[in-house]
Length: 477
Image (cartoon, rainbow, N blue to C red; front, side):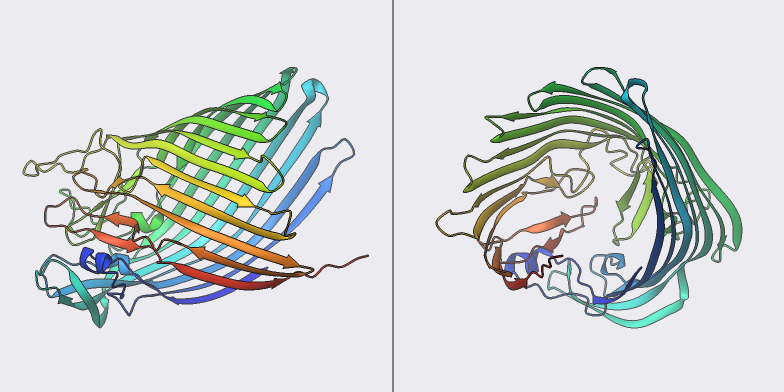
């Protein structure tokens, strides 16, 4: 059982003037997030004589998340006023997960069967807040928002839904040949809900279901080397908060909500391998993957910073991942992990209005999707100073496009961390210096597709020192 009661002021992004001047003063001193959660589970497990295993887990959850989020502020360039929102998402869950794994003598195989059931009553509301703005001299960005009035009379969302999630799955693993292991599985998911939408006074129900297969193969080449390949289909229904958010502008047919959002479907393919070399001093693993998405839920940023949702036609995610570890001696340990990938729109319509210059973003990169990421670290454990450790870490993130039309990019960033520690008996003293070079960078930089939009930055922390003492208790019996 776990209980959490969390209350936090929350910050938002800053404009270019504040970012490059490192004036990290929140433009919203009224935003917050309050979270309450109570979660409990009870599990019964049993190991059978033949090596088979069974378990069943019953769970209960009670969650409440209330917030006044900075990311929901809507402001049009040059305006002296803006709007925000206060919302609350509350749900309870009751359910269970059951699984049995049966060991079989035939082909050294095993059969896994399982099922899950989740019943979750959910309520959600959101209403408008009125804000005033203090603008910079060019009237193109905001120094500070001030909340002047809560407007519960202007509701942005207000629904109640009873969610029913059910799933069943089966998987069979076997070895048709020595050193070759195959795995085949099938899963059925159904997410359904009955709802009452207070804003359009409608009631009804929706359900999304899918059967998804997966198949995989692993071949042990011996001497610490091997290959594997996997194929699977994925399925992801749209979130309720997206479906029942009131549109800023109704569609041509008069729809005020996103009842037509479709579940996202994915085809995943992956091949890879691993190898241990030089008496296990070097270990390398690599993978190539591709995921093709259909009806992936994507958001389109509007001129006032509101969000319009669409189920995209087709998307592509393709990349390579590489991991290397090297331990030349007991004193030195080196690791590297990185990926190079593309995340692109294949078919995605931005607008169906003939007056809009850009109708689609087919073939363009998704925003906030750098193509190259890597992290490397070297650690030193000196034999001349027992129980002392030190390491230096370097992280690299390549440039990415800030908007869906790929007209503006952010140059990416590099930063380094240094960590050290010393242990004496049960006491450990440690110090971490994060962003040791005090590099100026943003963990995200985004912009809308309109010519008048400006970049908003989520600034990373400057050079940060962390010092701590830890004591480990050990017992003997």
